[in-house]
Every structure is written in C-alpha cells, then in structure tokens.
Length: 419
Ligand SMILES: Cc1cc2nc3c(=O)[nH]c(=O)nc-3n(C[C@H](O)[C@H](O)[C@H](O)COP(=O)(O)OP(=O)(O)OC[C@H]3O[C@@H](n4cnc5c(N)ncnc54)[C@H](O)[C@@H]3O)c2cc1C
Image (tube, rainbow, N blue to C red; front, side, top):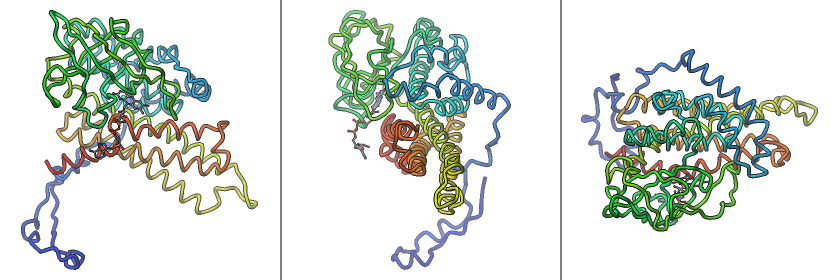
C-alpha cells in the first residue's frame, strides 16, 4: 500500500533546532508495507472453524479449569490429569504436524485456544503453551527418529515437556549458556544447570540448549533429555508469587549422558531453534495474558453493575465508566497485535520476530494493567483470596518477565528498527 506523505520541518523541529535536511528527501511516496503497516492485506474476521476452536477451548476452561483454579493456586497443585484431558482435544500439539498426533493448526488458531483457556486458569494454560513450544521444536527441527519417538506421546501428554534455556548466570543474555555438551564416543555428556524451568522435576522430557562449541550463539546446540537419564537431577521447587498451579525448578546435569541421536538438528543450530520456539511462545504467553485479563475485565464489569455506593450502582460513576472503557480499549489493541503477530508467523513474514516481540511486550503489559485495575475496581474485596482478582494479578505479573523480559522485547524491536 502506498500513500502520499508530505513530510517537512514543522514548528517543533524549528524550535528544537533540527536542521531541515529531510524535507526534500522524505517528501513523496511512503511504502506503508515497508513502514510496517500491512493491514490492507489482513482480514480481521475469524473463520467458522476458528470460532469453533475458540468455543471448544472456552467450554473446556469453564468446565475443567475455572472451578479448580483457586484451589490449585492455594495447594500448589499441578493438574496433570486435566492437562491430559486437554490433550484429548488436541491442545497439547496445537501446531505440531498431524502425522505424529498433532492438530496441525495455525499460530492464530493456537492463540485463540490459549486466550480462551486462560479465562479458566492462567497458570495451567501457560504451562500448556510451554509444552506446545517444546513439542513444536522437536517437530520442526528434530530428526524423523526423534519425531516418531517422542511426538505421539507428547501430543497425547503421556509425556510432558519443558524448555530449558535460562541458567543461573545467563537469563536475558541467553546466548551465553555455560552448560556444556561434550562428545564422548557416540554420546554427549552434559554438565551445568538450567534455572527457573517450568515443569522442572515433573516433566518427562527436557529440550535443553547447551554449549558444544565456542562462545556465542553459534556454539549452542539443542538436545532432548529424558527424565531418568543418568546424571540428571532437580533443585527444590521454587516458591513463587504466582503460577502456583505449575512447578518451577532448577535442572542439573552432572555428567549426564545422552545418545547423539538426541541432538536436535546440527551442532551450532540450538540457539536459532530456541529463538524460533520463543517467537511462537511469546504469542502464546501474550494470549494467556489476554485471557486472564479478559476474565478480570468481565468480573470488574459485573461488579460495577452490582455494587452500590452513595446510593447508586458503581457503574453510574463516569470516572469508573471511563476506566472500564480504557481497559476495554487496551485489551482490544492488545488482541489485534497478538493476532497480527500470529498471522505474521503463519505467513512466514520476515518481520514476524519483531511483531511477536511487540505483541508480547504490549499484551503482557496491558494484561497486567487491566487485571490490576480490575482488582482496584473491586475495592477491598479485590485484595481477598475469596475473589479471583489477586490471583490473576499474581499470575499475569510473570508474563512481563519470562520468554524474554519486556525490556528485552524492546531490545529486539529496536534492533529490527535499525537493521
Ligand atoms: C516463573 C518463571 C518460569 C520460567 N520458566 C522458564 C522456562 O521454562 N525455561 C527457561 O528457559 N526460562 C524460564 N524462566 C526464566 C526467564 O525466562 C528469565 O527469568 C528471564 O529471561 C530473565 O532472565 P533473568 O531472570 O536472569 O534476569 P536478568 O537477565 O538478570 O535481568 C535482570 C533485569 O535486567 C534487565 N536487562 C537485562 N539485560 C538487559 C538489556 N540488555 N537491556 C535492558 N534491560 C536488560 C531485565 O529486563 C531485567 O529487568 C522462567 C522464569 C520465571 C520467573
């Protein structure tokens, strides 16, 4: 799409003393696609199939997740049995190929599922999203042998998978892992530790990024490590602010031996695979923020209708109406960005990484803010555990930190802008 754009030096530029070097160079036609605006090519409506997928996820969330979410949080219970039921609906391999039991859906479809599941329980839906990410990495980059060995059992959730990139000394600097994988005969021997691993200690499979070569991203390879491998052990479960319905633990490798066949792809490709996994992972986590915040929004709206103060329903105070209007607007903007990012990944758009980072940054910030405002609109009751708001706020907070912090999302976006 092309638009006429007369750009010249305006009064504010004169005030700031910016020289008028650009007026002539920039005047003229701007390619809106190159400028990042591709809405002309997009259809915003969902298909009947997509609506049906979303409805199925919502029904599952209402029947299986929502009635239990407060208890799971309180008891720190990881509902593996319920996750297996979700797998029966195809939610454990959403964008894994069908020949190994996956659902063969698009990233946009998956985003709809994670948003709807998170209406019922954020922590469980978010774990499922990580399992999907790990399974996809094996499907997309693993050998045929690895695909056949693991994916039928991952898509049924007979096996549960974790994604292991972060280390105690390398979080945001993810290309600097110290965990090593050294060749010994036909095996690899792993030494080191991974920190904050979702599912750690409970999962059956660990997709692990470890160093096989020199410094930097090019020295990292990816492996599948089975629980029970010699030399694999786990730290104590972390005590967390939220996400209590899923475990988090350190994963340790002490001369942990695996067959060469458990390497995913070639040596040196692991970091690239890890980042490709995270592009989709970020859409998923952002979708979980949309769902959790959507639930909080609905609760706040209902509360404003029913709660009376000063002889009136709270909904009659314009300040609160405007607050709700802003929350709805933020959520809608976030939803559009997430769906656009998912669509860009489905289309293999070269800007997909940037869109995923933008969507993750925006939707997880907006989701947290909307949930926090919903808590505020409940007054003192929002702070009580008898109401779901404080749990949703606690659960959504970590989405601003993991799968790349929101500061790192800005690093990625800026890098692409200056590329
Ligand atoms: C509950 C939970 C579950 C998790 N699950 C997983 C998992 O399953 N698998 C996994 O691999 N990891 C997981 N993580 C780890 C998570 O991805 C990391 O915590 C995150 O990437 C940040 O790394 P860090 O904690 O080491 O923080 P640091 O990297 O030390 O960052 C500290 C602060 O500095 C900022 N910062 C760092 N570098 C820059 C920079 N260049 N510019 C601007 N700001 C910067 C960060 O944004 C942050 O605010 C999980 C974390 C949590 C809390």
